[in-house]
Structures are given as structure tokens and as C-alpha cells.
Image 1: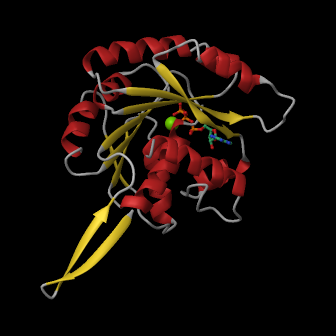
Image 2 (image 1 turned 30 degrees about the horizontal axis):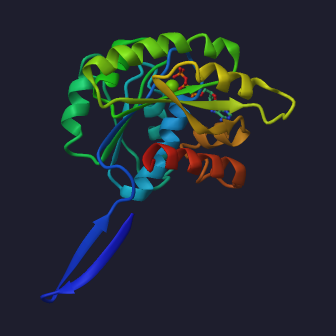
Length: 237
Ligand SMILES: Nc1ncnc2c1ncn2[C@@H]1O[C@H](COP(=O)(O)OP(=O)(O)OP(=O)(O)O)[C@@H](O)[C@H]1O
Ligand SMILES: [Mg+2]
């Protein structure tokens, strides 16, 4: 965020310019449990709240993991507070549309299966991000994700869909990432983000403290760098 302050007729006039796209609904979803939807949603939520102070995290998963993370954050008095709400079923679509007027951005954390929440969210989202682990089991769900996106785009033509590889091995001898990339490129409706987020212990440590990896100390500079690149690809591209 860039702020300019002018002295005008003895009053301070503030002009605030936000970098990147404005008023976005970003859905983080998928068809499989555990690739990191809530982890990436909560990390993005902290970073966006720090930049604009105008973000709502909408937890639409019955497991309420994002809401528990928010409660832990509050209990541990980690600032800034991340505004959050829980919505299920048809309320995801209607509330996201209504709340879009009140918040600059909304991040929707959807559960790990094809659900009313995921489908409702896809109908209102500007961007859908699908985290996938670069393993064959996760990749097998990709065809169904692609179909969901194509169906949603028939109604929501502004929807842009992306996949981000998460929990990639840091062992250079593991070639799964390259294989996953070539597999994903066969689906033209979903774009592959450039960033590949590695499996790093700090993601789990930060999560149980109600923090993002960019806040947790001692810092893991590589994890911080990956999250910043991911954030820029989501909000500023
Ligand atoms: N890049 C990462 N490195 C290490 N651990 C990670 C990473 N991303 C996620 N995790 C861990 O993987 C587990 C699953 O993550 P998370 O709960 O975010 O997945 P999810 O997709 O939201 O799952 P669900 O489908 O149950 O909602 C958590 O323990 C989380 O801390
Ligand atoms: Mg989750």
C-alpha cells in the first residue's frame, strides 16, 4: 500500500493507492484433502491484511480449520487480527457477493472435496487457486477440477483458475515437480503458477501458533521468499 498525505485547506488529505488488483474474491479449493488449502489461505490472509487492512477470510469448510487458526491467533495475541467468518452451503455465494462491497478482498477457504461450498465459491470468485502436491494421487484429481472450472466459467466468465504446486520435496533427486508441470500443462483452462512451494517444517510450526510463515521466528528465509512470490502472483499479476 502506498499512502500520500497532502496539506489542503488546513486539513490533511490522504490518498491511498493499493498495488495490484482491487476487490477480488479468491477461492482456494480442491478435490483432495491436505494439499495445503488452509495453509495457503491463512498465509495469504495475513500478508494481505498487512498490506490493505481490508481482507476477509471466509471459512467454508465444515472442519473449520481456518476458524481454529484465527482463534489461536487471537488467543496468542498475534497482530494484525485477521477478520474471518464461517459460511456453508448456498450462503457462501450470497454472502461473498454481499461482503464484496464491504471488504477489499475476500479469501474463501473451501474444503477438500467437490461440495456446494466449492461450487458456490467458483461462481463468485475472480480467481480460484488449487494447491496440489506434485504426487500422482493429487494429480489424478486434476481432471475433475478442470471440469468444475469449465462448468463454473459458463456462468462466471470472469473466473481465472490457477494451480500451485505445494509441499514439493526439497530433495533435488526427486523429479515429481517436472512431471507434475508437464501433466498440468495439458489442461488449458487452468494456469500453472510459476512458484513451487516446498515442504518446510516452518509451515506446520507457524500454523499451530496462528501465524504465517512470514511472521514466525526463527525465520526460514526460503519459505518467506516463496510465500512472497506466491502472494505477488496471486494479488499483483
Ligand atoms: N509447504 C508446506 N510445507 C510443510 N507442511 C505443509 C505445507 N503446506 C501445508 N502443510 C501441512 O500439511 C497439512 C495439511 O495442510 P492444510 O490443512 O493446509 O491442507 P488442506 O488442503 O486445507 O486440508 P483439508 O482438505 O483437510 O482442508 C498441515 O499439517 C500443514 O501444516
Ligand atoms: Mg483445509
